[in-house]
Image (cartoon, rainbow, N blue to C red; front, side, top):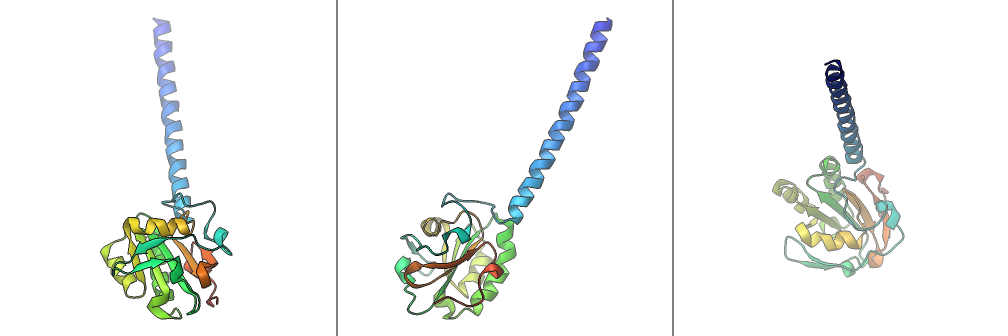
Length: 185
């Protein structure tokens, strides 16, 4: 009988220890998820390694997509002769995207060349956000933007780029304010 009591107590202690360990692991996973979300890497896509700054100095890959207005855009759209272009990538499930959207809208509203020089690529973004973006940018929604994301080697959201002649990426960042104030050309 003594062995049975000792065995039950031993199993009980093991269960309590297991419960505490599981609680600790869950807590750490939540902390890591919050850190990743704040870093702007929520919803990472298989477009390449590193952040937006890793593609600076390279030419964006070839792509073809259709905007919400039905216009076909390709890398050739970034001819550079008419000035620089601002390109932003957004994802609905990404908290930093929601934080950066108003900043992008402000930057796009005052961007040289106006709406014709600003592109917003969205995935799963609300109709209200698309309408706000549409006022200051050409918008590509849904899977149509995946090809552009691959062309720019987007690995996390949000991502922002300043693009010049021939699709040459002059600057890239996870935050709008990290882009240079002056447009490159």
